[in-house]
Length: 131
Image (cartoon, rainbow, N blue to C red):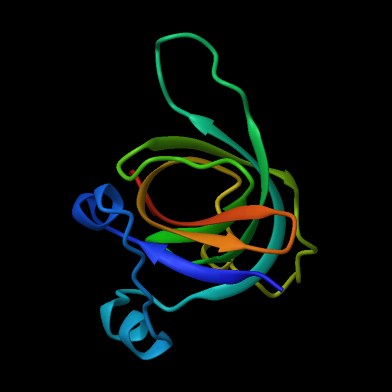
């Protein structure tokens, strides 16, 4: 079982503090409703200095404003990521394009959480799309 701990500011990160956010607090801050999904993704920092390694992960939900992903690689707050879907979810013919996740985009890391398991560490990221 993974335990989720959210870090969302430089002060708590620098002091090693971990902040837990309740679902109710998250819902109050949300601007757009979330659509659950499970899509294989690849992401990497968007940078002009070299070719950083790509991290594989999973998109767990999305909205018109952003997405939530999980990966084994840690990214800093404020990092701009190049995000690409690797395996597309099954599409229902009745769904509009806006009801589907973006297949490729740039997004900024707005918050992150560390999820610690018995033998693994995963990271969850709240990303805001850059239009």
